[in-house]
Length: 574
Image (cartoon, rainbow, N blue to C red; front, side, top):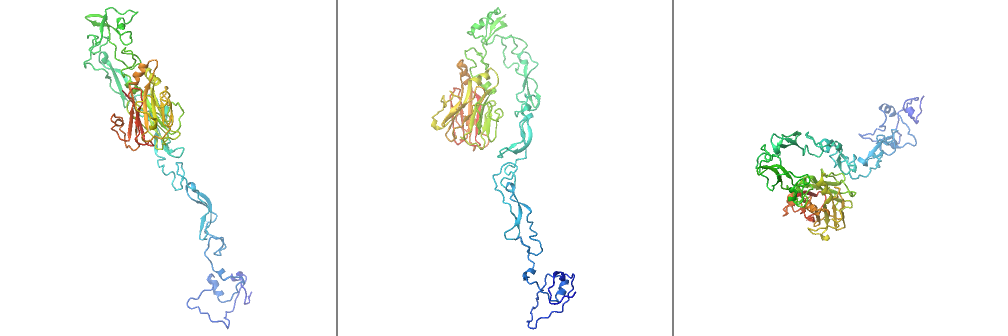
């Protein structure tokens, strides 16, 4: 087929399919001015394939009537919903509609890719969330790209409990997300009585403590009695309780007191006297010995087979010294007097102090989760109890808010079972008081607000709390901030309307102390110095000690009480 000139050449014809066009050489119009292209002539068909340009350059081709000059010029593709580069693909290379996220941590939001306003690229249409305070919860709450920062101890090894009850685990986030706790739980049900085996069987943090047993050494008389102590799981060799000699004298009591293989060979002890050469009658077992002590027959006796002036007879022994046993051993009419119970009370009783940032029902046997027998504190509770006559420390939580509605303070007094211990718990009390200067209390007062008439109570200027007769706490709300110059008082009071002399004797055998140290006091506090009579401790410490008279003794605060401060308590013989 031959195509006439001029002709509009279709794409089919230009592609050489179904049409063969041959045109005569183009000639410029006669009136056309010559074109000066210089040295940089422009190629009129830059996008044509070279093989097509050869033929097309030799022929005139008419453009479509509605064609624009710019349509032939390719453009850089923009992100604008148009096919800018004329490749029949719109917005290629911008991943439009693909899933995307914006932000990090809990702020991360999902969206899709859309065009930027300037068309130069794409962007994610998601809007990040708002960051919050970082918690310990396994999330990036503050959207910083770091999870649980500030709680770096999470995952570190830790242990709960002591001795055979100890279990190991890892540090984990607390339930409230504010702190970390040990993820292990102590196996307290494994605790047993302490045995001499090198283990902490009762899970109190000490191994083989206080284990002693009786034994016998190869010595005569009272010197045969001995004892063994446990250390590192082994019993020590038997050591005699009484050494022969050392000026020991034989007593007329049927025993070889001086360990010389002879009994009652010495003269009668001081205070003993011959009484009869006849045995006591069944009706009067102690005979004249009972009459010698005005009816007190519990602590003296009639001893047989003593060498009385060369003969065999009977003698009255002197009444022994008073002992802390709930009896009038020396027959002076007063039970447990002469301060004989001071040391036994210290060794068998526990004075406990507790502070809580949470309300505790009253009365309470335990101080929340805090065990006074071991002591301890966390971010809500703090407590400790005396063991022997050493000071023990109660440290306030760092975040304590003194005077907050739920703050509680409490004391307890607990003793081992027995006649004396049960009497102490039921007839004696430790009382703790708080007061502002406006309350007008003074050192040595017999009453502190409603105490001792009541076990707990007070108002906005004075308050008090006592140990209970069952060895528990009467938690006292802390009614006001404890600031400089405010007062803390302590008293140890025993009362028994049926035996006031015994109650007074026990009261006068014990000193109860409470001391305070500001958080600014670094390192170990010298509580002995703080409680010295001349008060030569750190100026930011204070102390109050009872004097056996049942009255309140006062310490005056030299700084505000707040988180990190320490209290210390002590029981000691008077």
